[in-house]
Image: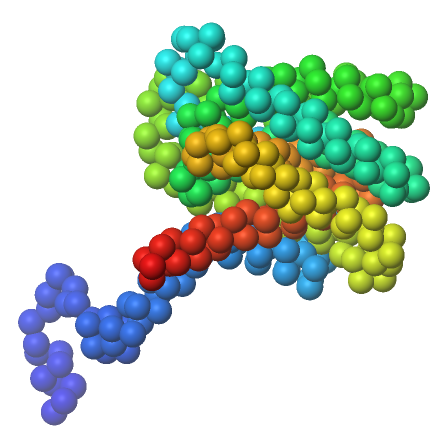
Length: 343
């Protein structure tokens, strides 16, 4: 009887909607809330960076297999990070002189000089010393641009200073490495080639994408691409050196001391000096970031390709301290805002 009714029923080619009550978010709003929280978490820069550090230290076995992805990831980060730069920015070179000069001063002379001085004093291992020199000689971090916006700094100043730092780094980085490490150890042509892949090519590609109008489709995902690109870099660098962190912490202790002084201590001194000179707060934030945030990813990439994973270790440690320092700046701002509201 049942089969007769089924077979005799009219057949419709239009599929009927099938409802699964356990996936209906209207019935279960908690799914919608939890899903939204998970998505926001996967977009959160601090969470992504901390996750990369924890996974690299906890289970870095995949790092060896994906180390080839470090340079491509850095190139993608640089391309996406420079997409939003307007072409009009470069039409007034005179207005760019002050930020560019400050970027070179803070990144190469102040922070770079401090790192090299501390490295000569504290580091005895030649490969670690090479890694310290690489960190000291690379341009300021790409992340300075979005970090400045998050901390309510002078974004235009940071943007010009960072781009100027990168372009000047094409000359300064090989010269510093050649002067300190010597021609027998360092090959300037190889460093220039890697810098061309990580700086010149991405900037040219970003201009082409902007000219073709493709940038409008990419820019909404800029933060997501940048953050997860950094995830690949941070996880790989830390994962490759995870055994050193646990089995021989004394070996990296001098690097930890150098990185702490090069971020937290130096940042405190920069703030004290800027405050005494009555530098306005947005500009003070930009100068602080320019003096404490190095492009450790590029240093790690060069070290990994030319000298091996131990040379990338200082960049890995420095990355951890830079992230923690940036998070501390954000937390301090939140605390200051709450304190003002309670007064």
